[in-house]
Length: 151
Image (cartoon, rainbow, N blue to C red):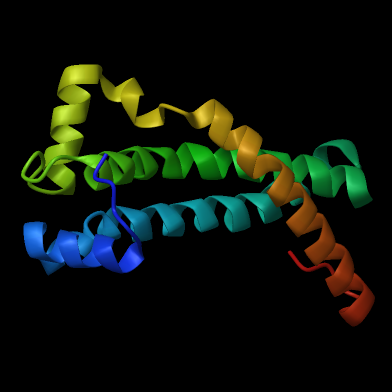
C-alpha cells in the first residue's frame, strides 16, 4: 500500500518513481480483452438466437434471455485469458514481466493453462445479468422503433 494523498499525488509519484510509461501498463491486454468480450457477446448472441429458434421453435423473451446467457458465457470464455493477463500485468512489480508474451509464458508454466480462466465463474455471474438486460432491451426497443429484430 502506497498511501497516496489524492489522485494527483498518485500520478506525480508514479511518474516520478516509475516513469510515465507505467501509466499505460496493461493497455494492450485491456484493449484485447474488450475486443474479445464484445466479439463473444455480439457474435454469439445472434447465432444463439437463430439456433435456438431453429432447434426448438422458441422465440421472444425466452429465446432472447437464453441467447444472452449463452453469449455472456462465450464472451467470458473468450476474454478471460486476456483479463487474467491484464490483471497480472497491471498488478506486477516493475520489471516482473517483459510484456504480454512473457506474462503468458510465466503464467502457464507455473500455474498451467487453466490459470488463464481463473475467475471465469464469477465473471459469468457478473456479466450474465447485464447481457440479458441489455440485449433483451436492445432487441425489443429496436423492434418497437424499426419493426425488425436488432440482432
